[in-house]
Length: 115
Image (cartoon, rainbow, N blue to C red; front, side):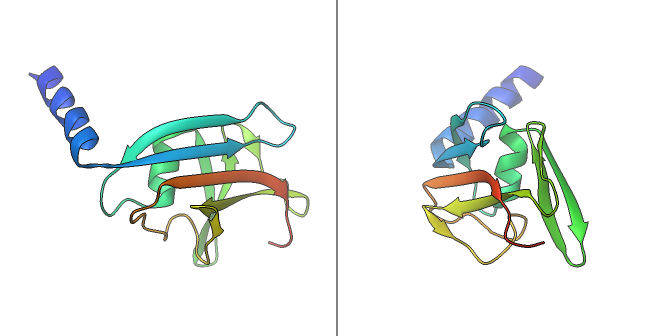
């Protein structure tokens, strides 16, 4: 019975979910990845990232920041994780960005400007 439920959920996501291509650029830490996935209405950028990668996030004040993806950790004052939706920078944290008709999500490990 549980296999039938899992199959139904998988098929429902494929039929009703939006397709999303996720690019993970790890800098020099490891080879980049491209992942094809889907998301459902109401999912955040962080929800999808958590589903496809090992993610560590921490809260600073009212904001939750991604600190590590697949073991590649931010180095405060040096390197950090930043994301783009459909090639554009967004003005909110991944936890608060609700995906709506997004086709691509790109995470980049790069020199940080501030924290």
